[in-house]
Length: 219
View 1 (spheres, helix red, strand yellow):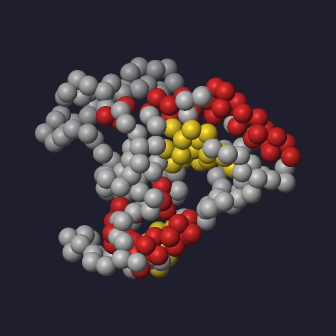
View 2: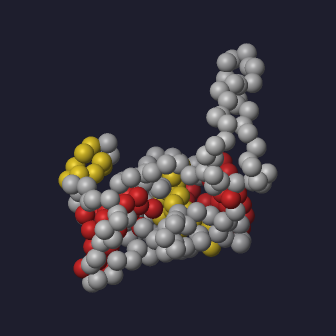
């Protein structure tokens, strides 16, 4: 495997759950520097040379007034209202995954999860709703079912619906950038209690691909 010399040096340690630990997979981190460096939050236009943002807030008796934001130079909405984020490598997919978990020994949760599975199929026939699993699969330590969304409009509708209707269940929402470990960890969003996934199994899959000479991203 050849590592691009223009990339930053591979760090000997990384931060894992707030603790500095030895880098477990330097080859992957060399290929994917964003896993160790969050960079700068993106603005979709060149803000260099524009006036500084005002710190003035609207009057509010509670002191919680909102800022008056400058208009975008192009007068348009952010591209984030467009296609779902799929990474910047060209290896991603256009859909985001939603995983809805239940505890298999909790009959109340299992019944509620089955009811939610049916309700989503009726409420959102345009979404991809996968089978209801009775056992854990992949990096998921609890049984679950998956729903795929393909637009920011679908994501917003599904998120609003799940906030209202998820009940006692935990929900994972993640993009598909082509980097499965990062998508299931640093880019994951949770509704309800967070569940510890077996992300190491996803790293192991990447290590196998690297050992076979494939420097691509996990699918």
